[in-house]
Length: 92
Image 1 (cartoon, rainbow, N blue to C red):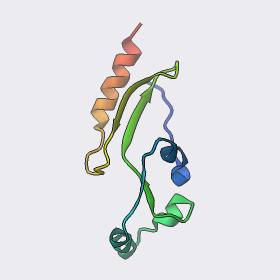
Image 2: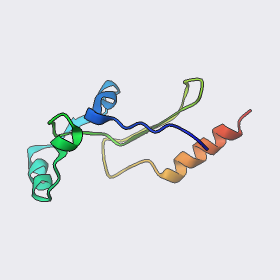
Image 3: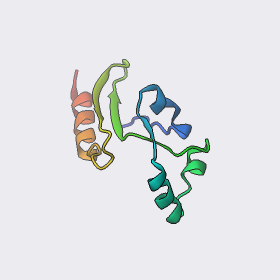
């Protein structure tokens, strides 16, 4: 299977979908203590993170599956994504 994967520097696309939140100050301090420089990683100086989400869009631009949860500990399972892609590739 071949498909495109989006990398969203600065969370610009995630922002358009309403899938961004700012890390609370208490967590910013913890990230900093562990040497995680999120503002530099974001490339925009912010402490914003995207909500984990999966959008499967077919070649015609139709969204075939979506999964988003503000609880970052609940992420889309890769196996589910693969199953969706296999179903789409098998469809006439």
